[in-house]
Image 1 (tube, helix red, strand yellow):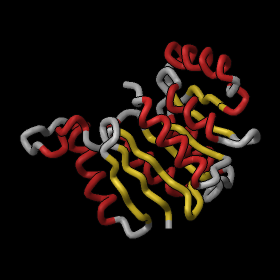
Image 2 (image 1 turned 90 degrees about the horizontal axis):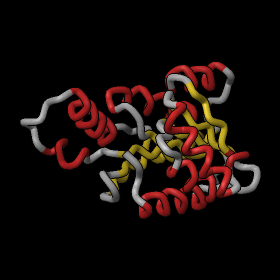
Image 3 (image 1 turned 90 degrees about the vertical axis):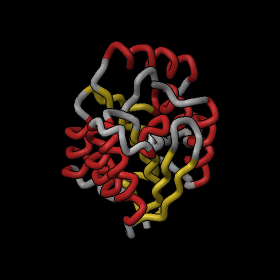
Image 4 (image 1 turned 180 degrees about the vertical axis):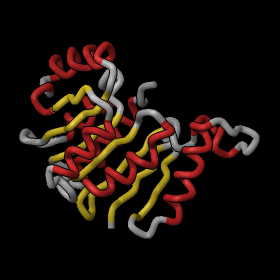
Length: 179
């Protein structure tokens, strides 16, 4: 359930490449992806990290503190949809430089739409697990998570609001650059 070191380094590179200062993460788990991104941010950079599991995020906080990045990460223990809607309602549309989605797959499309509203033109929405261990290519697999990812992949392929690249790193990482 954790990104690979190669993916962490790649995301850190992207954050630096786009000059990110404000980022969003949906799905923290034990915090490795947030740690990777935080290390790529400038000193005054910030991450709003969304998760619902305090047990796992307590582990994350421990490692963020050891790495000296805990002040860059604003952990929100609440449903991500609530936090994202609050950011939209607070006038934060087009204010973020990077967003990373790696949470419950059935809400990926909703997370994508909300993040696309919050990310500025030229910013990047990164979506994890888009290959889903190859299940998205096997049409005999029809569980809800697989179908959701499969549908989102198709939607992204046809979405004229973004420039798109799917990178075969980890379990597949989609990069959607907002036009």
